[in-house]
Image 1 (cartoon, helix red, strand yellow):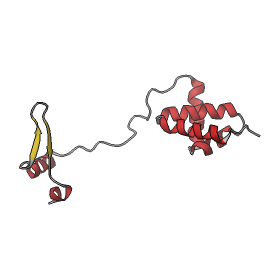
Image 2: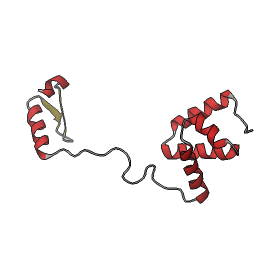
Image 3: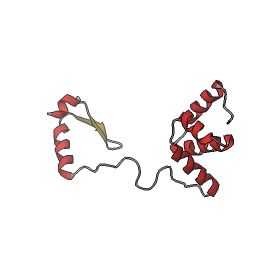
Image 4: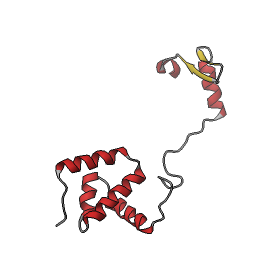
Length: 119
């Protein structure tokens, strides 16, 4: 039987877990699972609501002692959408009249509502 944390400690752990980024979440959860020994992976997986595979990956990374510097793999995350020239020109033409801005740093904005922009 694995050692179980008290309800107060679990709440503090979950709160701390919510404050850190993905990579450090994986490492923190993995360290906690290692501390508990047999059954620790499934207990911590349930506590933090992460997959057991994520914890196993974190444990492997910690044991290798060559931790990746990136949070996500190369190419991971949201993809940037590049606007075409025609789309940029059409949008600029649409908002050109009610355009406002700051001439010192080239910021521009419009006072149109989303409904007015939809045309």
